[in-house]
Length: 285
Length: 331
Image (cartoon, rainbow over all chains, first blue to last red):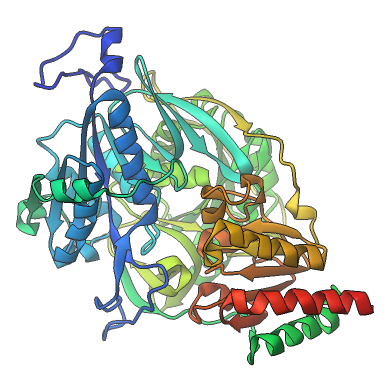
């Protein structure tokens, strides 16, 4: 089946043998890659580094929330259609924790682009590093969270799609396998949604709340220790990267635009002060 | 040809998205700061009338960039079509609003051109010859000034509300309008979008509420929502929430405030245990008075609060309910 950009789309079985285009492949195998990121914990106090260009490393980290939903969706798709879920991240040794958790939840294997320098890559180069690391793989789908809680660019997944020459859809709330590809539900602004049909392979960026997250089981945590984790060094992908196209000149605590009055005292005192404001300043009582 | 700035405005069903005027305001400010000329472009199937609407503003030229394949919107058509147009005009800077639609196609467009997007910016700075774009990082806890390190065109998207749409300058006379037809062959567009729809009729229209009590993650458990409801009831207001609360099913989706929910501007917005992620802030920063209760003194919500309480909402809210009831009984 020729895909829209003229690229031949061939469905393969578990042994990479091409399958004929029949309805049977609907039941088959989805090989899904999930891009995940480790970010500072939501309420972790952040300190700037000496040059004021990034944060200091000594904070607590967690998995980027939308990425957790992306992983959950991949696991659910695999449970429905069969297949494989592979997780990938870029970052220093600490980022392996994200992969271990994903393996414990049911991912089959992991790829770790391990180097502190990956943290400083812009979205363009991060996507290029991912593309280089998976060049020998053949995925049907790539999921990422819709954006990260640290940079918040909301770009890496879409850039990766363009680098691979694949179609994409963003802010996805539902995925359904169809005869000739997938049907996804996109979230739009102001409470609107839209279904979009598209061929595979494709990249989807996943919205938080698409599903209910699972917890890792004890047995899952145990099994995770024996699952394959491939490490990719900066040197392995360096030739695919360029200098960053954008540069953080400085990072700082934003200046307040409002004159905020902090109310202090015991809870009872604060309640009284608030009611005074509500009555005399805000005038809603 | 002098350097130019191109603002790509957004339209849907023949109407300009009002955030387009904000981006034009940004473009006018940047044009004044750099001395570059300012052009605007509307993208769609037949958008010459919209290009004329934009041409009334202070711009050098207004383009209608047209193809039958721009309707309905797909990232393939927009990225491919705009690439042709932008390459033919070679602007220094391309500005767009940071809407869901733009974030869907602009990283693809920039990548196809070997360029980059500084996305979701809230302002800009000009230091010497260097342009810096300010964006929020770490969910608004920190801000960054970001520069372009590669060749133009440089792509920038601005956050909803970053500039004042009502401040857009009108031109002395209407700017010339030029229609540019772009060629999109068969097979360029791989996505097949269906019609847009709403999930359910919105039961509550929070945009009409004068008082909103809104809860975030700090509420901890579903059963604690009741406490916030009691406060809302005592104040005669509506209960609302940030996205994670609705994702968890603790309140229905139609109670959600933020970029994916409703945008409100009540007299009073009382935020309980809401940290103030950007996606939430854009939906409520227009509120006349904002009171925030949060145990984290560095929560970004305090940046925009008029009155701030750093503390445990479970300590503060029960006596507040009693005080509000007393005040109401006394008045």
